[in-house]
Length: 123
Image 1 (tube, one colour):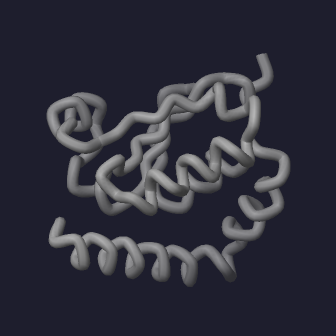
Image 2 (image 1 turned 90 degrees about the vertical axis):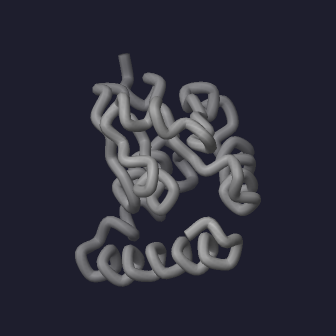
């Protein structure tokens, strides 16, 4: 089977309005490919997250995705994996994986997440 048609699981922050909006946008862009993505809301699921080896605090501060081989990737690797499944987003996945861009984008990503969590009083 083509790995792009195998299910992956995205561990997302369902208590975050922008995260929910990002999920909805992804589903619209992905079309039929979105059927191969299972969305797991991490809110209140600390024990389950620990059970699969994901630190609950990290789950809140970094996107996590479990691939078709049951490996869990996080932060930009998670976004890249998710975007590679959508033809329109593949070029963006390639771009953010470039060694020149990736470190800067990673720093920006972590800053934005911390800002969002502080603003909502979650850290």
